[in-house]
Image 1 (cartoon, rainbow, N blue to C red):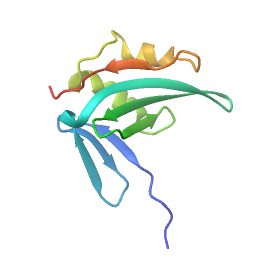
Image 2 (spheres, helix red, strand yellow):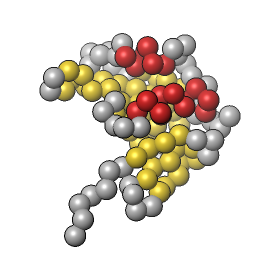
Image 3 (spheres, helix red, strand yellow):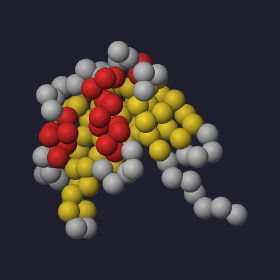
Image 4 (cartoon, rainbow, N blue to C red):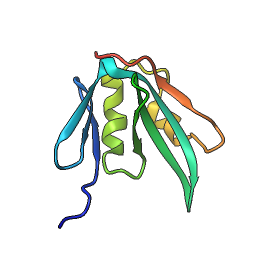
Length: 110
Protein backbone atom coordinates (compact mmCIF):
# COMPACT_ATOMS: atom_id res chain seq x y z
CA UNK A 1 0.00 0.00 0.00
CA UNK A 2 1.34 3.41 -0.89
CA UNK A 3 0.65 6.75 0.73
CA UNK A 4 -0.97 9.74 -0.90
CA UNK A 5 0.79 11.26 -3.87
CA UNK A 6 1.72 14.93 -3.66
CA UNK A 7 -0.45 17.18 -5.78
CA UNK A 8 1.41 19.25 -8.38
CA UNK A 9 0.00 22.33 -10.07
CA UNK A 10 1.23 23.87 -13.31
CA UNK A 11 0.01 26.58 -15.66
CA UNK A 12 0.23 26.27 -19.41
CA UNK A 13 -1.39 27.64 -22.54
CA UNK A 14 -4.18 25.11 -21.92
CA UNK A 15 -5.00 26.26 -18.39
CA UNK A 16 -4.33 25.14 -14.83
CA UNK A 17 -3.14 21.56 -14.66
CA UNK A 18 -3.38 19.51 -11.47
CA UNK A 19 -1.64 16.14 -11.19
CA UNK A 20 -1.70 13.91 -8.13
CA UNK A 21 0.75 11.40 -9.62
CA UNK A 22 -2.04 9.07 -10.68
CA UNK A 23 -3.55 11.23 -13.38
CA UNK A 24 -4.16 14.84 -14.12
CA UNK A 25 -7.05 17.24 -14.38
CA UNK A 26 -7.13 20.34 -16.54
CA UNK A 27 -9.07 23.50 -15.74
CA UNK A 28 -9.02 25.42 -19.04
CA UNK A 29 -8.48 29.17 -18.80
CA UNK A 30 -12.15 29.66 -19.72
CA UNK A 31 -13.01 27.96 -16.39
CA UNK A 32 -10.78 30.29 -14.32
CA UNK A 33 -12.88 33.19 -13.00
CA UNK A 34 -9.94 35.04 -11.46
CA UNK A 35 -6.53 34.53 -9.90
CA UNK A 36 -6.00 35.79 -6.36
CA UNK A 37 -3.29 35.67 -3.72
CA UNK A 38 -3.43 35.77 0.05
CA UNK A 39 -1.22 35.12 3.06
CA UNK A 40 -1.84 33.37 6.36
CA UNK A 41 0.15 33.43 9.56
CA UNK A 42 2.03 30.15 9.92
CA UNK A 43 4.40 28.64 12.43
CA UNK A 44 7.70 30.37 11.86
CA UNK A 45 6.44 33.01 9.45
CA UNK A 46 3.92 33.62 6.72
CA UNK A 47 2.46 31.17 4.19
CA UNK A 48 1.52 32.72 0.85
CA UNK A 49 -0.94 31.25 -1.64
CA UNK A 50 -1.93 31.78 -5.25
CA UNK A 51 -5.51 30.69 -5.87
CA UNK A 52 -7.11 29.92 -9.21
CA UNK A 53 -10.80 30.60 -8.54
CA UNK A 54 -12.94 28.53 -10.90
CA UNK A 55 -16.36 29.36 -12.31
CA UNK A 56 -17.87 26.33 -10.54
CA UNK A 57 -16.97 27.77 -7.11
CA UNK A 58 -13.96 25.53 -6.50
CA UNK A 59 -10.39 26.73 -6.40
CA UNK A 60 -6.91 25.36 -6.99
CA UNK A 61 -4.31 26.72 -4.58
CA UNK A 62 -0.53 26.66 -4.63
CA UNK A 63 1.40 27.66 -1.52
CA UNK A 64 4.90 29.09 -1.38
CA UNK A 65 6.26 25.90 0.19
CA UNK A 66 5.25 23.83 -2.87
CA UNK A 67 8.09 22.77 -5.15
CA UNK A 68 6.27 24.25 -8.14
CA UNK A 69 5.73 27.71 -6.57
CA UNK A 70 8.53 29.46 -8.47
CA UNK A 71 7.49 27.85 -11.77
CA UNK A 72 3.84 28.89 -11.34
CA UNK A 73 4.76 32.48 -10.38
CA UNK A 74 7.22 32.74 -13.29
CA UNK A 75 4.74 31.31 -15.82
CA UNK A 76 1.67 33.37 -14.89
CA UNK A 77 2.59 36.55 -16.82
CA UNK A 78 2.73 34.53 -20.05
CA UNK A 79 -0.76 33.12 -19.53
CA UNK A 80 -2.84 35.79 -17.79
CA UNK A 81 -3.27 39.56 -17.95
CA UNK A 82 -1.93 40.50 -14.53
CA UNK A 83 -3.39 43.29 -12.40
CA UNK A 84 -0.01 43.78 -10.68
CA UNK A 85 3.18 45.09 -12.28
CA UNK A 86 5.69 42.90 -10.43
CA UNK A 87 4.08 39.62 -9.36
CA UNK A 88 7.05 38.21 -7.36
CA UNK A 89 7.38 41.48 -5.41
CA UNK A 90 3.62 41.71 -4.80
CA UNK A 91 3.55 38.15 -3.47
CA UNK A 92 6.67 38.61 -1.33
CA UNK A 93 5.17 41.71 0.26
CA UNK A 94 1.81 40.10 1.00
CA UNK A 95 1.12 39.71 4.72
CA UNK A 96 -1.59 37.95 6.74
CA UNK A 97 -3.43 41.22 7.43
CA UNK A 98 -3.46 42.39 3.80
CA UNK A 99 -6.59 40.56 2.66
CA UNK A 100 -6.99 39.11 -0.82
CA UNK A 101 -4.94 40.47 -3.72
CA UNK A 102 -6.56 40.13 -7.14
CA UNK A 103 -3.69 39.01 -9.37
CA UNK A 104 -5.72 38.63 -12.58
CA UNK A 105 -9.34 38.42 -13.45
CA UNK A 106 -11.08 37.18 -15.29
CA UNK A 107 -8.37 34.86 -16.51
CA UNK A 108 -8.21 34.06 -20.19
CA UNK A 109 -5.97 32.18 -22.53
CA UNK A 110 -3.25 34.17 -24.27
